[in-house]
Length: 112
Length: 112
Image 1 (cartoon, rainbow over the protein chains, first blue to last red):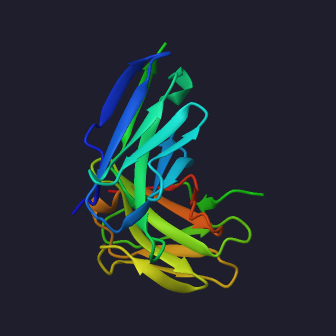
Image 2 (tube, chains in turn yellow, orange):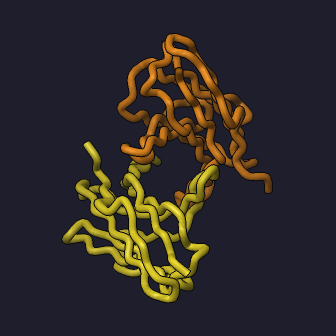
Image 3 (cartoon, helix red, strand yellow):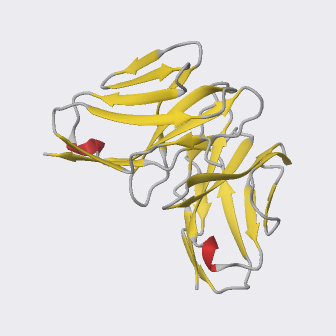
């Protein structure tokens, strides 16, 4: 059973526009969420995180929004750049233990 | 600091064989987690080791096993390989209080 879902396998955006990647989760015990970016032939790299006590976290061009009541988080990239083209995974974990649950990923293509 | 390293990077095996993958975490990190990545399933958690003990385990059959050594290096073993075991196997280490995981480049396993 997939506890973290990314329902859009792919997304194409024009350079300079906003990219919005979405993620839904089912487990209300999740309280820490992360986004990873993955280039081909490389391992995922950490991008940005948010804990359940916040509803927004910003780091440069990247902003993550958390809607706990809807069990939904999103990653906004503004402005999008061609170098942002990669697969983006969202991940969630609960307080207890260190097990992360990942979504299936969204492949972002930023068109120059 | 050196990053997470995984060996080998590529591996080809046949059905029924067994395989051992190795992961060296970032120096000082005591937690090592293993993940399987396939196109349709995304990143699936296999298990996590902390101080030589398995701390968490995902929903994989007993053919998948692991261990961690006193220097925090970890190995993952898959016995009686099946075609469906073909995947990218990623390990991640963590050691800080922020729960962030650092991924290695992965081992690409192909089962023929």
